[in-house]
Length: 367
Image 1: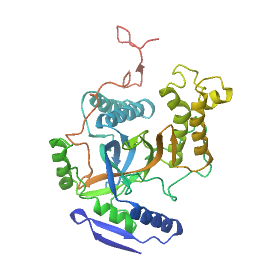
Image 2: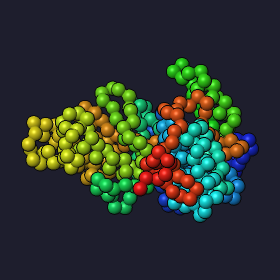
Image 3: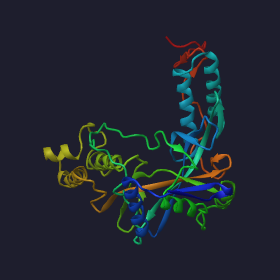
Image 4: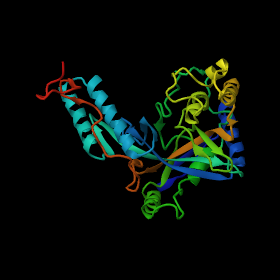
């Protein structure tokens, strides 16, 4: 059962009442979360790269995760994507020449959109936010959020990319609560004296230029705080809550002990809180046992919060939205800050596919 309501610029918002058991459970979870929520906290923008659907419709697909902290990092990722396409996928010198021309532009210019071999690439901008309760605590994973059937806690394990295969479709049917969230966030804009005037101006203008929003699937990260300090991010975004827990378990046994001076930074990589506690050969063994115990508790169940030596580590549930206009998803704003300028990321490659890893004075590839 579905219904269409007016969206931005007359675009329909299709609402479909969940009827399948899993969908109904997810909607019930969302309703419970909405009842607990007292507001939203906005962390700021994230950037990635999307390509327009080959059909030329309103769908776009994410090809580089919308998880980069500044526009230039997303441009750099696009630079690498096109360079490796030239190296590994180009069918002939003509294709390679086109790809390398795009790479050359990205090495020198802040390019946010370009079409290469018929594919339209765009650096896109998302707003990251999270729900908080009446105590200011950030929302944790919901029971119906995706989890692996068999959790893998091995140090070398890796989960899916946070936006793997994600299609951005402003016309996709939504559940009632998804539709309500989407419509309520269309007017989201920065406010307050802590934002510079150009940021406020661009934010207000974006509401007009990109009046609709598309909600992205939830992602997960570590947040932490000590005492009454505010929550601060402790990791990047992960596709599942388990991936974030595994990251936290590694941080507790390996990184945190080194950061706090309990294990020397130059210690062998295999040394962590567990190995030191097992050998009981360090004055810090008792302190490290607290870290090891917290990691063990994470591995023993789907815990979303542990406290170690006065610091609370929590698995936070992050959400992202893309502003959407007549021409698709919003790109970077003029007030968005870049951490560095464009530069060459890879060795020179010629149209024949020869890579000059270490050029000689004559410009010939090194033997």
